[in-house]
Length: 368
Ligand code: V47
Image (cartoon, rainbow, N blue to C red; front, side):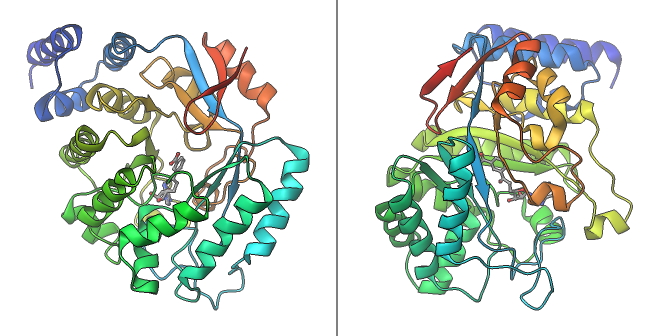
């Protein structure tokens, strides 16, 4: 495409953003194809501010737990999952998870437990309900953000219950929200290549629709930087936007950059995404998902220095203190696995933003 055409495409997008008009498929592909990274970032920041965003940059004080790394699904992008027979396989009991969380609570005052794990065929649905029930009982004031839509689907096959019954049972036991994992890329072509054993895009979306209908807010993600095309990224974002139009139940979107180490793709020569692609994904997500309130620059994935810049490319959240992260670190993440609040605050301030500690539902807890 000629340079002049590219400039006029960006200008057309700018006019739409300034008029508060919705962007379409072609606009988003053109933004991803643009080499004018700073212009794309600035447009995303304009769109964020036009929709009421300010100088705040949010984070939550949270604790990551993984109940098991045993998984029946052999996703080719995953370096975390193992089989039951592998030496490093673990499946914690509800009691062990509670003991661990209570010990961590002595050290930090986290307000959220973020828990995901493998789809182990060696547990029952009661195992999941017991985890939630016991965590709720031990820490009634902590928000439990647990289990991806893929894990919820796994629970329906373990129990024979419907998605609605599984979600309602977990909610009644104390579940507060769902994290956004498992979405990967919705396009059937990509799913067949990278996650052939996983449930379909329709099931992932239906699980979130059902959660929203039950009053359970959720998060959403896109795993980019492997075999997908720009068009497939945009299709994914548009499907999320359509569901959000219907339910309004997504709290935040988190673009997840593929980490190849210790995966089949590393052996095929795949490398880490580059910073310009990470920033573009943040910006295009912010521009296209005009109805999702928050976009997270996940520091575990991109590192704090790039996350600082992402806050000027449409992101308004950096996730949280985390404490312990296994999924990205199994696949080669070089970031820390924990940030202390003081350190997060320093980074956010240095990025020219006002650090705000939030709870999971984006209620403000403290501002610096
Ligand atoms: O579902 C797995 C992805 C997800 C790799 O909801 C990988 O607030 C990159 O969903 N390289 C789990 N990505 C993490 C997740 C998440 C993270 C932060 C915040 C929230 C939220 C959710 O990570 C998985 C999968 O899509 N993943 N392996 C990898 N090698």
